[in-house]
Length: 122
Length: 111
Image 1: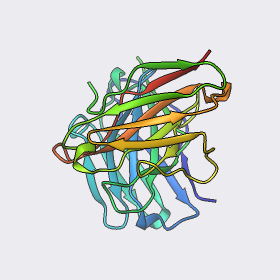
Image 2: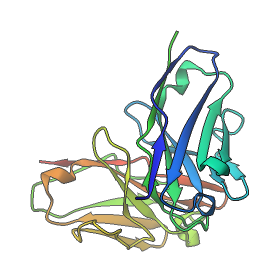
Image 3: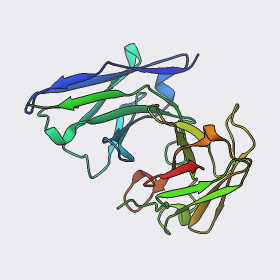
């Protein structure tokens, strides 16, 4: 079964660092883009960035450039999203999603992780 | 302000047909990039509903259909069912921003 399994919910304080994960299985991890998508409470989906695990080519939305870091470890089929200093406004659900074809721009995201809820509160 | 514009809400009675729009520009939908649609049921992760403008993944009922024309796309749902009540998002790629983009989402209410 093709799936993406994300790490569990996190409760952090402002200023703390965090790295959440997304592990792929059931397919060739290095041949498909992995995107990260934010959903703030009660709001819509926002595309944050994307990585191609095969060569670590990474793109960021201008809204998230410099705010987060996306990486991948192809040896363990896992993508990561990390923050160096969290803010209360980072409180959201974060999803990873797989690009179907591995081609890039026209890829639909066909497999989604279950989501990781990040809560940042003093 | 999303790059792709969707109506905030649509509604319909069981059995009816509803449509929802996704309006973009010459740098995304109008540039020929595919439009994909996702269904997000309450409390769950999004699910791919329509890809490549008109295609349904295996398991998606043929009550759901997509279309694209010019700088816009539409999702139609026929034979509306209570279980269709969800948020629906369109998605494409924008070449001027070099980013993947989502619409703001449309909440479907089944009356």
